[in-house]
Image (cartoon, rainbow, N blue to C red; front, side, top):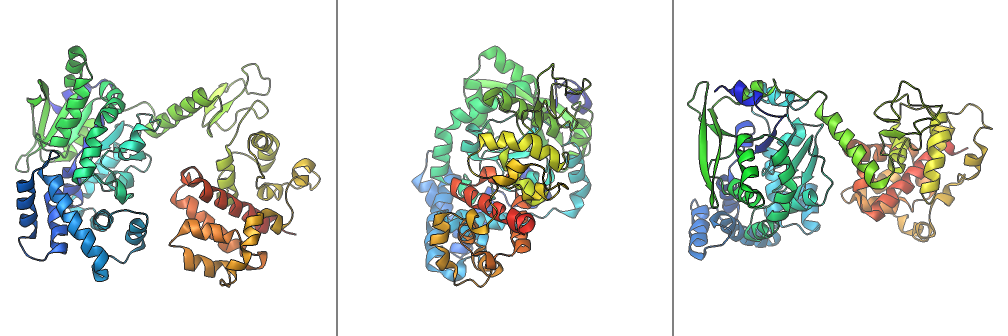
Length: 521
């Protein structure tokens, strides 16, 4: 059997289940032992520091295994030394803010260390590009126990889910997604590394297995970057197999491929491999090679009919509409017999910009509207369309004011939209709450908006809150716009991810920006 035969027998495009071998290869990151050795040396410079922790862990034992026990022992000493020795700390806001949030210094420093070392090796440039190329139509998604951001950076169209809780409690779509089941350096507190982490992870593993089961039943799974004896893989497989009758488990075996790295090999070999998973013997196809580009080239032959990013948006929009009865931001819904809908368009369309206007019940969501005031990214619609059809619907479903001056400024006739104009605040102080005004005196120490931001930018939620109390004469519309654009450049869906108070403050700042930039006379 050839590698092309394996791919041709797939019922659909596969998921990759990725281990640390991938980023050891492409980033030269350390394995688990290497990582713990590095941090043991920061606690104690003795050449046998790691070996001492290993010996103690073996003596004490642990139900979670020796490596989590070693990590626990190192973390205890590392955290104590970090707090007592300021010169030991990495003086970066990423680390310091994480610890201030309650994260262990050990985890915060590990996250920073891995982020800093995550630089692609030039000798694998072509191989990495092949992997990126197949992300568009040839892969369904990524499941990984890796902490680093290799796939988030390479597959920028994919949506990441970090940690068990985010994965278990989110409405995943099963396409164009990255499941970081052991946490991510982007959120250091989510890293699964010590005894307690593994205990909690294993206690919840049945929920994770249930969430992943649909993916395992629907898609081929290619394991890459793991050892055949990896305990994480065996534990996850065991949890899934325990939930399945024997005939369904047999179906899984037909679609599992294990990539076995052999650095001395030229070309590849295909063989069968059987491993004991709990009480069962589980068979899969083993692909042995040294050049992963061979695999990526073969996978390029199996592709989805449309880009996986679009498939995910389609599933997400349909899911939202079915659950809430409200169209999502890219879905436009009208009556099938509405005369204003172009007969050449679907009654329900996703990503189609010329759907009949008056048949639309929802063009944009409130969070998108706010973002568009800053980013100007609702380019599919004119200001008149947005004010005439989207604004009234949002006004009914959202309490409080909406920023509209950006779009009113694009309407040539000042007499148009009199109701919107009459209900829009026309004074800066009316945009601030009583609480904002009450604490205005506390901003006297800041000479300007820029001075405030430079002082507080390491704590953005606090900075946004204090900004709302600034008087008009200290506000600079252009500088405020720069701050707001940075928010949405870093995260287009920031308003959905902020906590309630931060979201409220940022929306208030957008209303102030809208007034200062386009509404002030």
